[in-house]
Length: 215
Ligand SMILES: [Zn+2]
Image (tube, rainbow, N blue to C red; front, side, top):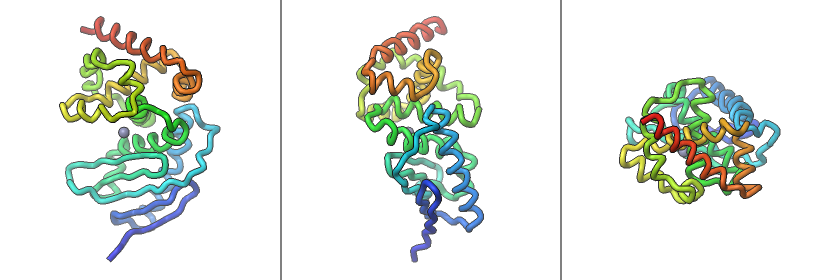
């Protein structure tokens, strides 16, 4: 029997494939709606309205120990054991919601920038401290080229598989970029509208320099 619950909110169509009563679902939906503004503002896009109404699916994970998700132009998909779990793993939701916003406002975005911004935003949004492992993995910045930063291939998966916190490296790269610019929106405008990709090599250089000093 299909027990999916479907709700429509102002900006999303929700599908709950995990158990949720009206009250739990309502609370979750309100939080997602509030975050849409919060994340957009953090990115510098508070005046932009996304016209599509994405499907937001809260699904059951196959592996009880592995919560994951993905976020694209029209869909946000979280895989968990139960709805409550998302509160304890709020970064997962924020990360995927950020992907959804970025894919709409900058469809040409590269994998590294997309992941780096999504990861940067979840720590910034919650005000929590980034794990030390992000910094200790910054040594891998030496292997990353301008071409990799701008690629739309999913080369980062290989690094993750090797146990390297490449998403953390990407988020620190974004943090470094933001120290010279005000918002993510300005970064994306510079790279994708003005075509000024020298900011990428300058940031790589700044990260490498700092890494040298730290070692
Ligand atoms: Zn991601």
